[in-house]
Length: 161
Image (cartoon, rainbow, N blue to C red):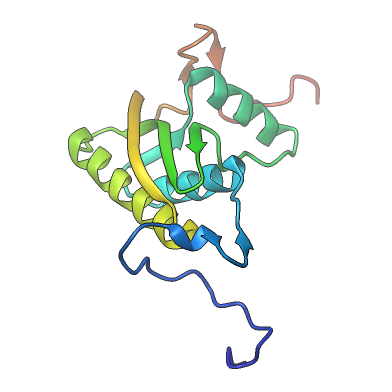
């Protein structure tokens, strides 16, 4: 299928210099909701090797409960954004894999998030603040919950058979 027709919408492309003024034109204004930018940032952060999970302890616990009951875990979990007409700022909470160099991980996540938002939204990303609030250890799925101190299992066996 060709993009030569007048009704075709091209896929997101690399930002070609200048400011993101293409969002405000003489033909109209394009506004991008915070939730859209948060999803893009969350997906871009998760693409980086060494990111185990996103979100602070309570958010991860709630997300895992949603997964147990059949709900989808939010891709914007652990992401907070502020979006203006031409700029965006992003805050990320993440869990690093043990053995990953955290400064290198943060730099890679920052680069990937900035590139994705600028390419897909045409917004200038003014800052990406990253908070690493936990390290995932091998075999950590079984053990104590960091927030409650209670014993937990990744997949609990039914008590009644």
